[in-house]
Amino acid sequence: MLRQELARWGERAWVNLVRITPLRAYTRLVRVAGGIPVPRPLRARLLGGLAGAMAIDLSEAAEPVEEYGCFQDIFIRRLRPGARAVDPDPGTLISPVDGVLTTRGEVRAGTVVQAKGIDYSLEALVEDAAVARSFEGGLFFTLYLRPKDYHRIHSPLR
Image (tube, rainbow, N blue to C red):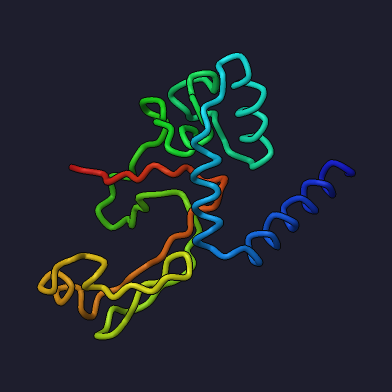
């Protein structure tokens, strides 16, 4: 019971810290800190402990935690072969990432897609005016990758 309460308190504290920290500064800080090399003898304890504290599921990872040189490597880890099957039903919408749906809507002239508090025009996002126009009237979805989510992006091919 106490452990669950401490975990909830830690999660709320983390969320509040993120809310008051300027997002670009926070992103840079996490990128720098996550790239610090960890000596092999400390990896299981340090990286495994951080992964556990952040509820990162390493059960599907292709490598044991000792093989990851820094915390960033855990975020972009490869999955072991066969860890996730892709639904073959052509009517199924398949997400390229783990994450939480935060924004959705119809693509219209002037519509922007928001990511990490930064607005982008569709044309700027795809870097091609003709391609941007081809999405007019379609739907967009923004998926937020939480720290615990698997951060490698997949695109299923048939």
